[in-house]
Image (cartoon, rainbow, N blue to C red; front, side, top):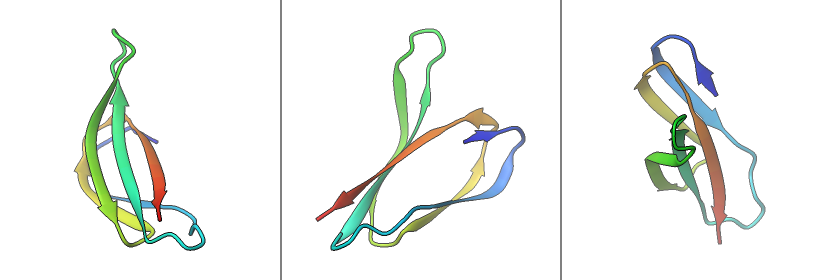
Length: 68
């Protein structure tokens, strides 16, 4: 996801995984100079959505992993 201007509220949604007890959401950015990933946020959730407040303009990457 690439935010071009400051966003007051960003909603991430993903599909349900059958029999999942929860989901692990990770939000990160990629350092352009080193090519490494910097984790900004990591959280275990029981829902299939998450709201971020006031993300700054940046190119973000995110992953979701089912927890069983």
